[in-house]
Length: 382
Ligand code: MG
Image 1 (cartoon, protein in one colour):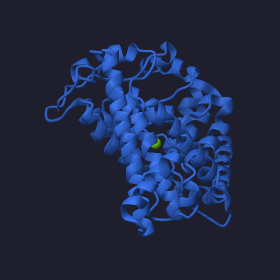
Image 2 (cartoon, rainbow, N blue to C red; image 1 turned 180 degrees about the vertical axis):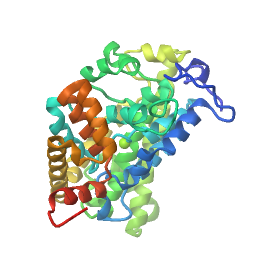
Image 3 (tube, rainbow, N blue to C red; image 1 turned 90 degrees about the vertical axis):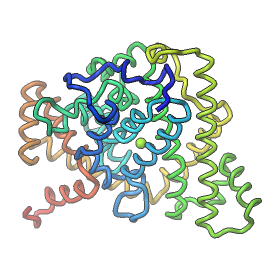
């Protein structure tokens, strides 16, 4: 790997909470990635909703395939910017570990339930998963990841939460930046979902090419496809257009960021962190076009009547689960009941609520539906 001086060089790493000898056959960030890949939370991503709930169809993105697409984009761009690919990959694979079942509907519902107890933030939960909840190492809690991977996972965070989080919360208080690798993984996330949501939305028949042509970024590339190939089968037309949109994002982000990095003259990761604004960024034009695309997806897809109805049901499931389990933590599996007892001793009701939120956030879509039935259907015995 040919790394720039401002990349997250291992020699400049802030290390792990629990000191461990360095790995002999891989980088510290490869070790982080491997620990993430082998975690139970990572396997659960397969059955968690991105936009479409898992049982709606086999070919829609799940949190797992979304995370893999993010990792692919982040690594590609990291290599051309001479940033640390392994760190980008670790952050990308871990960035959604804290997501609830049922995508943003699940997160909103759980956040509402948790309002009196400090709220629920999925980014902070991803960090909690790798710091606290994964439980399989004898000598430490969580996965004991490097500071740099943890810093990248905590993409957003409220000030109140930042104050509780110590080292990785610091930058939100000081208004600094994370590593360039973290900035890159953050935007790779957005590029991935913008494009795969167009793809899934079209295939689901919830949006149409004609509607999407209202978005200049899409129309420009769609015109190019039609000009080049004439009439195509819809699958090819869709893919040829989306891959052009995606390449435009990747090429623009890479070129704009390279120029910003040169202009800033940074020579060390700590100089990157001390800046007031990120160096990984789209050009002005693409930033505006990106906003238009996102507005389209929000209005036409994420708020589509059909999506809305499924999500309203999902919210009800999460609210019901929270109410029943918070009321009687003995209903949770023994390990979560124990955790609730411990947290309750430390923080009273806030601790009890946090244990319930940890249990619900860890559920896959189908586990949540099944657990709801087990708890509320009197004919179910187990
Ligand atoms: Mg994501």
